[in-house]
Amino acid sequence: MLDAHLQITQGPFELDVRIEAHPGSVIAVLGPNGAGKTTALRAIAGTLALDGGHLRVDDVELDNPTTGTWVPAEKRQVGLVHQDLLLFPHLSALENVAFGLRARGASRAVARGDAMRWLDRFELGELSASRPSTLSGGQAQRVALARALATEPRVLLLDEPLSALDPATRQATRRDLRRWLDGFEGITVVVTHDPLDALTLADGVVVVEQGQVAQAGTIVEVTARPRSRYVADLLGTNLLHGIATGTTIAVGAATVATADALDGPVFASVSPAAITVHRGEPEGSARNRWPAVIEAIDLLGDRVRLHTTGILPLVAEVTPAALAELDLRTGDAVWLAVKATEVRVYLR
Image 1 (cartoon, rainbow, N blue to C red):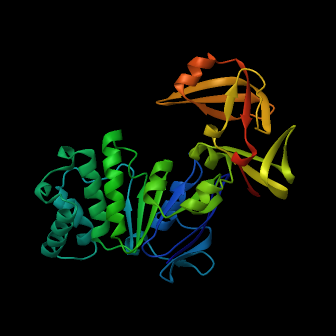
Image 2 (cartoon, rainbow, N blue to C red):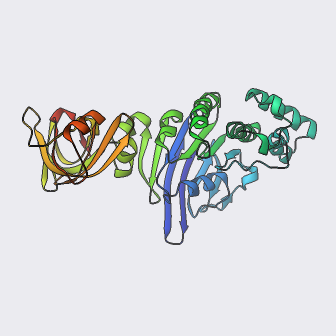
Image 3 (cartoon, rainbow, N blue to C red):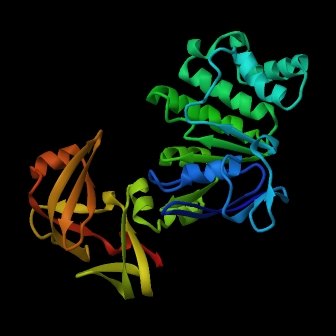
């Protein structure tokens, strides 16, 4: 098991993050730039010492400033795949994978034999003599992963593993990576800013903002109930927070009707697709309706996102046909409506 309470101070920045995971699980650490994701990864890898808290893997303490415990990186059962892979350009794929084994004391023959088996597992055996410069992005990614796994780590750390790949390669590699991780008996921690990576690869999510855990849980829990603006934006939903009294929520100067009754501070999430856009005040059964002004329009393939300002700033989603039919442009005054049953509400 990974039991990490990571406390690090770097000038004005303070990291205080907890990550817990069981063998066979994949945990995604999400967060905006500068949130502390890479700092947390370095602490687990052993390239950055803790100022407080602790780090344990399988009940073995690796770092604890209180007790003076410190296990250097090379003695930890931790494998790391960097964002830029860091393959040795002068070594072949086989020699790259064998490097970690040689560093841990394996003979040249044993290291090369094990490395070849890992390359075969990743369908790279025929490229064993190739240098990194001759490999495609996806092939280099597999070599880096094989190198990390060859040392049989208990914890595998992946730092933005797909960010350097082109879109077509990224999609295929993401699918393959999930398959490879399914066979890994250790713990995997994936640092990423891409929600699709988290949704595709991970069982659980830890969202880090400004050095703190903003939200943590299973994929289902986090996506169903976002608790910060960053998470809501990642999921493409509107997140409101206000005070509920029965089936009415006070959100600033606006009120939002809901189907579920709660009392006290709450979050409410509204899918952009659930919001209808009208030129005039709408009639009908929707209990929620607000005037707004279109601030920006984003074209996203078969969808159009309207960013609005007003008494309740929201993002609405319409089809290109609806955009043309309503003749909507930036700066236009509109009305937004949403049914009470489309508002998901939960306690803060």
